[in-house]
Image (cartoon, rainbow, N blue to C red; front, side, top):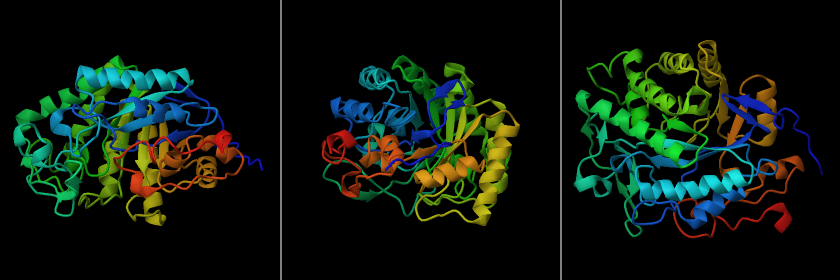
Length: 376
C-alpha cells in the first residue's frame, strides 16, 4: 500500500548539495574495519553501496565516525582517515556510492577521553579537556577483551590544541582526496569536542574553558579548518545538547548551544545535525524550546539546514519538517536493517527488524545481509 510523505520526500538544497529528498543516514559505528590499519574493506563498500541509491535509500549518507589520528581512536575495529591505506579504502566506498547516484560525507572523529591506553600510541594516556576519567564509560580494545573501563585521560596543554585542530583539517583533506562530497564534524555524544563544549566536563582555566564563548571555541575552530578544505557549503556539524552519554552534562545548555550554533552559523555551514533523542533522553517541552532556539541561532547567523535525529519514523519526519522544526531527518537503526528504507517508507513497509547483537563488530551477518524489498 502506497503511503504519501510529500514533505519528507520533497527535494531540498543543503549547503552546496541538491538532494532528491530529506531521508538521510546518520553516522553509525559498526566496527568492521580491516585489521591491522583500521582500513575500510570490501564488506564496508557493499554496506554503503546498498544504501547509496537515493531512489530507494538515502539522499545523503554520513559515514560512521572516523578517527582523524591514532590518538583519536577509542574502540577496536573503527576506521581512520589518517593513512594512505585508509584513503584508498574509503575511495572504494565513495566510488560505489557515487555509482549509485548518491552523496556521502565523512564524519571526522576524535574520542578524547573515551579510550584506553591499549588503543593509544605507545600506551599513552588518552587526551581531553580535563584529567577526569569518565567513570561510567567502557570500551572494547580487542576481539577478546569484552567491555573494559576507559582509562584516565591527560589534560591537553593549551599549546597542543593547534595540533589537534590540524589533525581535523588533515582528516578533511584526506576525505576530499578519498572522494567524499563533504565532512561532518563530530561534536556530539561525549567525544573530545563535546568534552570541551560542556561545563560538566570542561574544567579548564585557559582560553578554551570557563565561558560559553571559550568552551565553544575548539568546535568553531575545527569547523573553520574543515571549511578551509571543502568550503562551508560542504561542512556539517553534529551536536547532542541533551545527551548524557559518557558522563556528559552542562549547567546551561541553552546558553552553551545557542552560543555554539550562532558561531557555526556565522561560518555558513551546510547543516547542523542535532541528536534530539539518545540514551533514554526524550523530547519534551523544555527540550523542544532548546532545539528551536538552537535552530534559530544557527540560521539567523547564516547557517543553512537543521537535520533532526533520534527516534524518527517516516510519520514523525513528515510532521516535524512540515512544522518547520527541521529541514531533513537522519535515520539510524532503521537504515541498519532496511538498506532501501525510503522505498519501504513509500509503501508503508514492511520493515526488517534489526538485530542489535550484530550492531558492533562481526562479519557480514547483520551488516550486509538484510534483504531489500526486491529480494524478499
